[in-house]
Length: 94
Image (cartoon, rainbow, N blue to C red; front, side):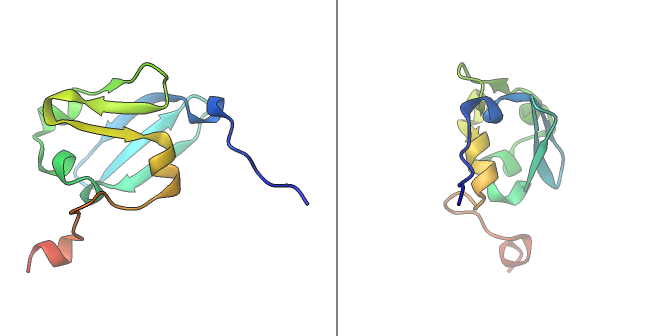
């Protein structure tokens, strides 16, 4: 039996898109990894302009929004799961 191992080269981010619903990492190998924006409360609460001010971090496998103190790795998006304090939109409206 074989087990799939993640090679660090598979985690290289080439571009990022943030819209009102999702964060999308475009990977160097052509994949797109997407997660709901509400998973990341600071990014969700940020202005459209603040969301545009991201940078790929030095190892190439994570993205940072320094102004809002948010940092997300490609591995975190692959594994999935909301950041601490994140609430689904239906719960947040209550």
